[in-house]
Amino acid sequence: MQHLRIPMVVTAAVVAAGLSVGFAPSASASTESDGHGAVFVQTDDLSHNAVIAYVRTADGHLTRAGTYATGGSGAAEAGAVVDPLASQGSLTLDRAHGLLFAVNGGSDTITVFGVDGSKLVRRQILSSRGDLPVSVSVVGNLVYVLNARGGGSITGYRVDGRQVEPLSGSTRALNLAPNANPEFLQAPSQVAITPDGRDVVVATKTHGTLVVFPLSDNGRPASTPVVTPSGTVPFALTFDRSGSLLVVDATGHASAYRVAHNGTLALVSTVGPTGQAAACWTVLIDGSLYAANAGSNSITAFSDHRGQLAIAQAVAATTGAGPIDMASSPNGRYVYQLTGGSGQVDEYVRGADGSLTMVGTADTGLGAAVGKPLEGIAAS
Image (tube, rainbow, N blue to C red):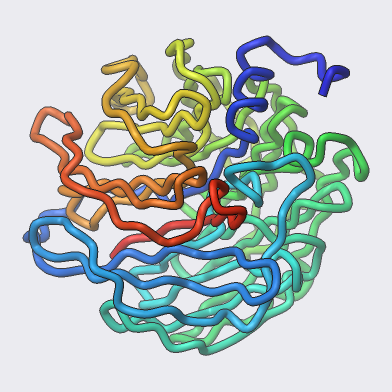
């Protein structure tokens, strides 16, 4: 670690939290009532990966309902502590098709579950066509997975009903340094498809770039990506309702970009730092972008208006040890924070002004504190 030439705040975050920046699926608030729902947490068990299902009651509390094997094995990037996959989006819910995608980093596969309330049915196990899948993005019928090892790669799929099929000719190498150390900082963190389905974006962490592949009409990436410098450790990617790409950097900065179909990025705004350490995972709700700070055990709130970002609250809430992935109920009323250190899911109610109030916790029985780091959260 002494050879890393990155700012002190990033180094401190790494030491404190095993920096990782996950892709918790961004969730826009809807007009749904506060009915029952579910929250899913991935164990990332190195031998037998699984998804723990929780029932969400009308007041936002979680009750454990079952555990479902993925049929694959989890993985850990070298150097990671509270976030073994050092990524966002390892567990991704496709609400439109009623599907849940889970990565099996140790098996180089993706498991596709059918979702029925809090119950899961394992439908498919698909090859990721790469080494160490860590992130999945879904827009419409298009799916892309990010493989983190060997310099990184992406691969596409199509959803046909509840069946997912590989998209031939869609695998592209990122050509990052294949054996750079420490792995959890050098490996890419997240893949995200633009809302219009015309581009695929990858965040590369300490490479300091956003890699954009324009997509053809059939969803296949261009042979050569557009690479744009973006901060020191760009980690978490989210799109707002205007289509702006919101990027949170581990140094506590947030930036917004317009994405052109040819893959070029135009900076709209940037804010920060927040004074918090290891800002990596995000969820977007009604113009509020929340970022989990693994090194500070806190959540930061940014305001967003069509890509114009501002720091609303540097510390909007405190969390358990090592906060990583985040998710929200479909209506945005409840926010769930997965803590990789303590292995809990912190439960928050979101006020009309965007404030967060903790209402409880659900214990997974896992976490770095007991030697079993976990990864990935999604909510329905």
